[in-house]
Length: 591
Image (tube, rainbow, N blue to C red; front, side, top):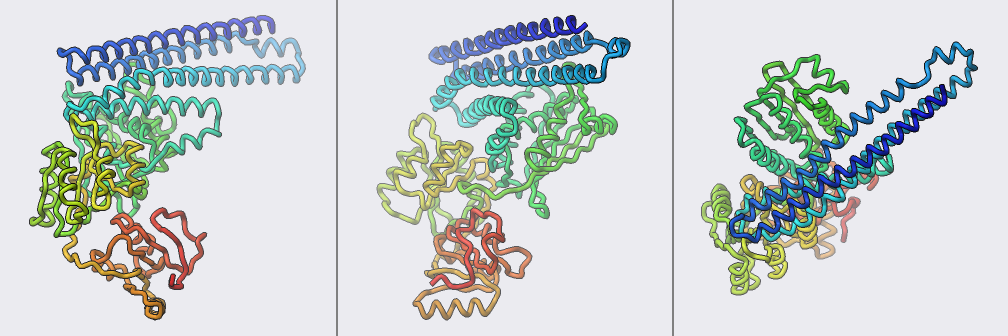
């Protein structure tokens, strides 16, 4: 019997090896087909009868064909390996045979150990084999993506809306490929690679991801009678959470697809903030088939359920695990048969990154210079500024050369506030490099849909230039600075203790320093427009207010103040890391 068992084991291992080789050949063939279609579409771009936009769409579809073909092969492979393992276990020696032969207990234990080892090896081999194939797919798919990236960068004459959609589609494929590699490393290397996956998370603008995803889904289902409604509350724009963008897109893409598969004709996505919890809530509702409590509990407990002919029912479970384990978030699911499903995803809100401008503060005597080749953006800004001050003056420019002439004729003129786009149709020059070249970053803002580009964000942080995402332009709060007579002081102190403020005044007088002192943040807020952003601010942590001094400091940082110090009796170790605080100091004056 042991000989038969060993012979069967060797045969099945040999069969797995043959399957693996066949799978690799199939994947290579599917990827080759995708690359061939990509090359054909790339060559067709130079024919006048085929528009660049259509060719780019063909290339994206070709790459996706390769991915879908590979995924189909993976599913078949999993089923085949499952059958092999079942057959192997069925052919194993029976316990009755061992007992009838009065075998010693140590032989039984040995058999159990061998069987368990076989199961572990089969499981590990399967995971490693799949992960290696995924790694190869992620590697091979990058070649056609490079060609696609080159084409996208050269598409200067395509309208911006279509250009953004193509760029986001290629970016999604890049993210999928990178995520495959990360998952491969996590399987091969184990826990040691979890730090790399965690490192891939970043502070992301949630409203922007939701807007991009809904645009993609509306395009995907445009030929079906499905109404996808997006409702973003005004206070939810400009809110960030710490996520991995590719995973976020996959999760909410999954939720929308699930609603479609449940025969929903109306899908509503609501984004709002929960102020009392400092959180963001994304709610996805549909009027589809819904689920019973029994099915919902089965999914929540790890079981599967699906309405799809070839589905496995694991999509919602993946969503739940991601929310809880990767995002440190919470969820709430309500579903009733024939009434639809409502899923709430609650994520912790984090501080905005350095490149982001949450509030636009403008002096009333400034002239607003709008530099964008899209007329609709000019109209958006004029409408926004008219809401707060109807007497603003505007200069409308549509090319960077016009901006260059304006700056050349008005050298070092600080009366202007520049709102500059990054991309210009038919131009190889971008707005960021022009702002740097003209040395106008101190009174400029980059208004762009390319705010998710890593290099652009890093360049802006280096130049201390703030970015306004174009999707945020309609909603960014605009604060008007009417009193333009700035106070010239060496520092500002905010502390509710009269003895401290009195001591600082005396020390300032003895050292010929000029300071402004406030006993509450509300008093300082009344004069906030009178101070330049570079003036050092010293604020007490304990103001005996509903908020801490460090929380007010974050508000000041988001407005634009650069040198904020926490003036406190607590030690540095008492506080968490706060990137908006330049230093934690004691109660003694700094002069």
